[in-house]
Image (cartoon, rainbow, N blue to C red; front, side, top):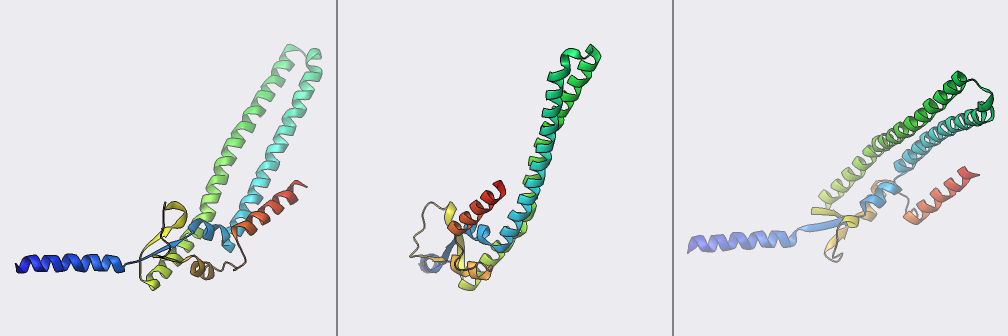
Length: 187
């Protein structure tokens, strides 16, 4: 009988501890995107992308110039000259394709390298806030199907402050900034 009472008491204590467990949530992606460090990473990636785009455009212009010259003069060239020019065009086309593939991979790797410390910093800040608040779990609001916000503490505002994100900075303002930058680059 004592064993049954002890077992029941232990189960009740476990249920009570679970019921008192503090749950929290954040919008992790929003935090990461709004961090000042993310602005710097985006600027670096944009500069690398622009450089790659300029190089690609130069290569395409070279190909188009050589192709136009080929079409204009093909009738007057000997078979050997025509073959050499065709080989040059094929080689240039292959280099353009290889450059395109390798630069896409490089840009993706660069983005991963630049964003990794940003993700880590955000994660560490959230972990510290959760520990201070006595939280057992912190969920990412964007990847959970349902959160009862009355029973879960929202750490997003505290994390924004700890990460140095200005109060007036929102995803909408970030989108507006990015659109303005894109429009400025197109002009």
